[in-house]
Image 1 (spheres, one colour):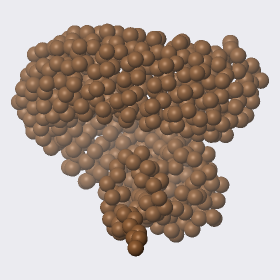
Image 2 (spheres, one colour):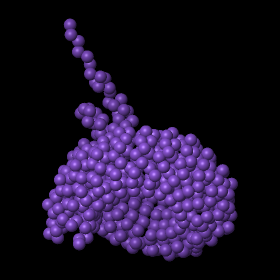
Image 3 (spheres, helix red, strand yellow):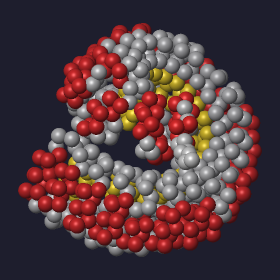
Image 4 (cartoon, one colour):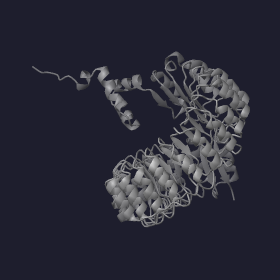
Length: 623
């Protein structure tokens, strides 16, 4: 008597499958899951909360399949227009896909205007978060359409250059429950608009008015916000110490302040602000004034709960580090990029008390040597990010100490640290959690160093090897076999790399950003192998890769259709292939075509006609 075994998948209930599906964090894992069988695909459709659309032609089908979305991201989907929204609402029942939608990202959707926004807002009644950043054509009419989102809690309008006080007034009247608002680079908004905002939106907790031409009168209005916790006003040229004095006696809930690059703010004004808010958690005053005054040093003594201080570009002394060390034991992040006066002794004093530091930026602090890095490594065992660009005095001894003590390190920037060599990289063998490693201009690194990186850093996602001229094909082979999660790679001017090396890169299936500028030994053979396998590429720089001919670019046009940014300057592409490439790459938004000697004026005209509707930036310079 024959018996038939029961398929194991039939024993898994829908609840169990949902629980399994929720454990999948990586997009690649979720994709593999839903491709296994129809039941897994159905469960994914039921449980998926976030959708990022890459191709507008698939939008209708996707919204029919995914009916429980919480977040819809159209920021990387070109050609979203009013007609697209009209077609979508006509063919897909919006009462299904829009019923649970809370977050909508329309960043860079420049084709979307008032009519399309009005239809979209009308269909998505429950929206709580909207992002229309970098929609440079947006104006007051589009802002009026957004004002229909009565339940809106968060709105990002960075660089909506056409939105002025009238548009902002429409929004604040219609969306009185706003808690987070970013108006960065909205240059038409003035003190009048900010005043009305502060009268109507009393629930605001986060406000960004960076680069606006507002004055201290706006800060008088902002000071009346009772729940404001986070205020960013980077690069506001007309804000001065008087405005900070308004904040000193207002904003009782203030925890974070960013006044970086406010040229009219002095150390006296910042001292006033700090004096009125001893509970501050975050201060960014980078490039704001010339030096840290004794008054600020005294005020910092009151900031017992401070966890972030960024004073980039300001002259400091060992005294400030001693004060921070003695009083700010909760400090997690410090930014000292391009600060004069940073010494080994100052850093040693700092970390002796601030042992909880996780992020330290010492970029261009050229007096820093191994002694300071050793102190950091020994004291800050939970260090996650260390930036040491252009700290030329450090050597492999520093990496030895980091490798011994900082096992949680995720970001390490050693750009232009010429004392770093292969032996130093070997010392990082215990730092297996590194996600981002920058080694640009470290000319003493070779393939041997890449072997050490590959064997020690399996989680690596970003690697910068700019002008590491001793790096070659063997190192890339080791990297490609071990660091499968690599997404960003800079090999510009690594002149020993050949087609063999670029073929190895094809095994990095997650690769999205690749810079190959100035590699004069790679040909169409290498580019074809790369394009065939790396389907996730969105940014590719081939400037000065002069040995690649039309056959390589044709392969790129056929296989790399997800590219959004491309640099072909000084390449040997011709009219016909350029037209083919620009026609096929329907997601391309930013392209550099400088000094293409084999392309005629007529060829450029055809290219512009083919892509002028969807392309957002094109750089053309002919001889």
